[in-house]
Image (cartoon, rainbow, N blue to C red; front, side):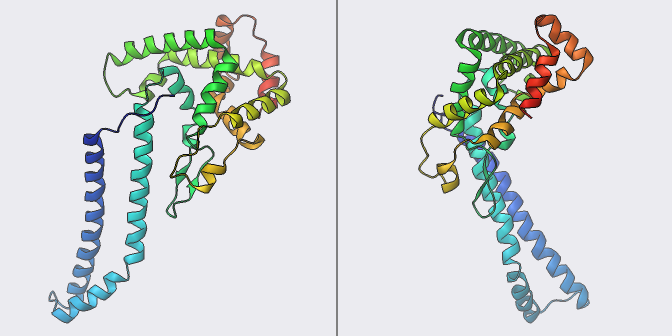
Length: 269
């Protein structure tokens, strides 16, 4: 995976400006409401002692405002990570496969503790494992077809609208075809799951300097494997349970056995 290029300074400034404005509005709104409330109590007039008293009351809101600011700063850090990922030049197919589980990436909470299932350094191992599951020839075809669809859908518009691309019917077929090929590799679910977990753990990216203990010590286990594989094969599960969708899938893959696939998906649940 290529190193991410620097995040656009203009985009960063815009997001920081919007965030700073929201924070300022929060403070001003809280103070204004407090002033209005005191003015109403005193017939519309506020004296210097009243303002001093308000200052004490307002300082009592420090914890509440601190929480708001911390959330804002954590959002900023998460956005930076997402922007870096969005600018990494990976094929469209890779991005859309990751899209199946990117909601489970670790994000720091208000205390700075990562919450989630996967650290981003897991991606290096995921792409290697995906390539081995599908094989280089199939991967090349998936990449080529997906990139062609992206060019056709986006018409050179940047940044790419991944949600729009994901909704493309032909793109959906490619994703489901890839998921089918992955699922069929798990006919011996227990053995293949063990292989998958060992391969991932042996190929995690180096621990970043600013990583938390949770991120640094993370390794895949059977629980996190099941979370990943179920998210990764979600579209296939939906298609296999829908008569019309299954008909389309069967037309593309005549040798696919519904009972066999259903059993595999159940074993991976």
